[in-house]
Amino acid sequence: MFGTISNIVAAFLTLCIFSFLYKDNPFYKFAESLLVGVSMGYAIPLVYENAFIPYVYRPIFLQNKFLIIIPTLMGVLYIFRFSKNLSWLSRYPIVFGMAIVGMFVPMSLNARVLVQMRSTMLPLDNINTILIFIGVVTILMYFFFSKEHKGTYGKISNVGIWYMMVGFGASFGYTVMARISLLIGRIQFLLGECLGLIK
Amino acid sequence: MKRQIPLLIVIGLGLLFVVHTFVPHKISEDFYEWWQTWSKAISPFMVLLGIMSLFMVHSTKIKRKTANWQYSFVTLGGLLITAFVGFMWGTREGTPYMWLFKNIQMPMSATMFSLLAFYIASAAYKAFRARSVEATVLLLAAVIVMLGQVPLGAQISHWIPDTSKWILNVPNLASKRAITLGVGLGITATSLKILLGIERKYLGGD
Image 1 (cartoon, each protein chain N blue to C red):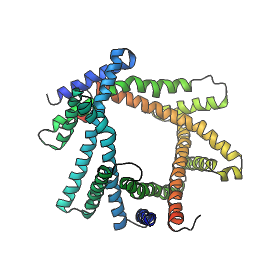
Image 2 (image 1 turned 30 degrees about the horizontal axis):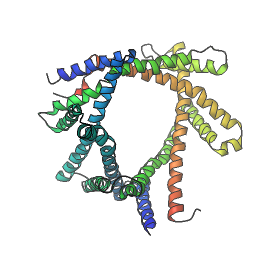
Image 3 (image 1 turned 180 degrees about the vertical axis):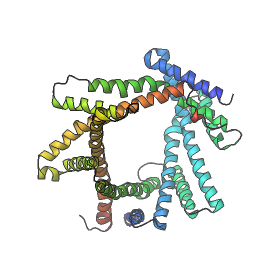
Image 4 (image 1 turned 60 degrees about the horizontal axis):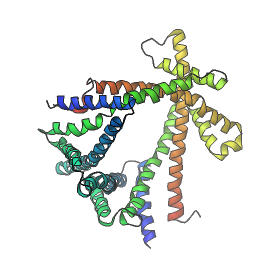
């Protein structure tokens, strides 16, 4: 009985969202608003249990690490974001987190630039390595806007567009597959678990 | 001073982070651990800010009776009930909190994402109508990759999964690599701008 009620609730909300395929309607708006509220409500106890208790409450009250009171007070400063006169106080917790950009400079340069360049500049001893090298160079040339894309340069950068189109096509294909598998899951739920039409 | 001190904190701590990346000394490791501990203590309050923001937006909508204000009750009700249930009976398997997750949150979010399958199909149709060579190349690559992932593709021809694999490993890799290079340079430039105090938008107004 309880399982049936659960399925009815889930099926009703699933159909409410699918109703958007016809047009925007009150059922969809209801489900959309509920999803926002429930998702946020779902996060609150999880954050309390997995972040507040282990990193704030336990260190201060059980382990007597009173220095943690300072970042806790800094966290409280976030709330001043809503005050017109004191909103500047909320900058302190923001800048504390923002300081990590110092680490991004060398790390991003290494992982996203140097490592990628190293992996591209391999000995050009097979056709795939040559094609990858040509692809990377032509795409980078396409994104170099200081020179007009005309003549030979335009033709070379055009090769980059073709590479990118194939890359975007592959990503598009993967995204479609992921969404369709979700759709199949919902249809299986409606026809199988709810209506019992699929065994 | 309201802007200068936060700016000095970013520059000072940021430069220490640059040093930390290159110097694997114990002091440097301790500094990073200290920053992580403090950041974790600050993090729950970010969620509090989000909750307060959501409450303020929806309570204003209700107060001013703007368009679709009635649905704000649904959002706030959903938030309060889910949070209350989570605090009251816990978040473990078999609790009402998990029932809400399995029968309300999860089916709705999965359906919401599955809706995109329909819109992607219509976008593909529009792209195909454009009849440009680039759009055709994009769709062709997408179709081959999709067919390469399902048994039907192998049944049509063994070339389809092989070509799909080649597309993913060669032109797709080249494209992703070049884009990653661009993104990397972008991140580095933006990080440097923040570190040197040139980019200050994150500080907000006043």
